[in-house]
Image 1 (cartoon, rainbow, N blue to C red):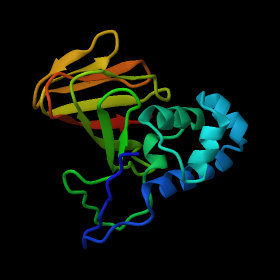
Image 2: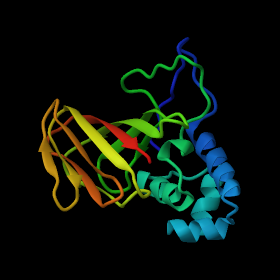
Image 3: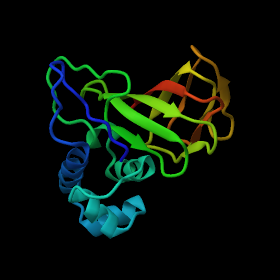
Length: 196
């Protein structure tokens, strides 16, 4: 999963590990939705064996696989990655649970999950030039906000992305196909997913 260890304020490694967090969350959310392994795998368009492996703490899920599961379960992405944490939460640059895309040089690290009343998640995105990261539509009503911190990128709806430079911001419907393409090495941005 290309995972880096998240640390708490005291510098101690946070427990449990990212694979265990994803495994427990998948089991919890599948049970909550009253779906069998076969039903959830079919809804997400993944193999039943892949889902079984993820629920047992194995495998190396890509962003695309986790998003497909979130759409099938109708849950925010953060619900699979965000374990309970203390009231003060610090993630240093370069730390956090990182999930990589299957094809492009694109990674996200969940920085903050929305509270049940706020319904938003905040991510740090890192990307390199090459293959653009193309995202399938998320749940209905999702709005994405991207603010570019460094580099250059094309971002937004797949049919009409816009070029961003450091400090630029774009908002677009996340429930339509969208894209993020780094145009310069070392490109990174803050991504906020807002759920209705």
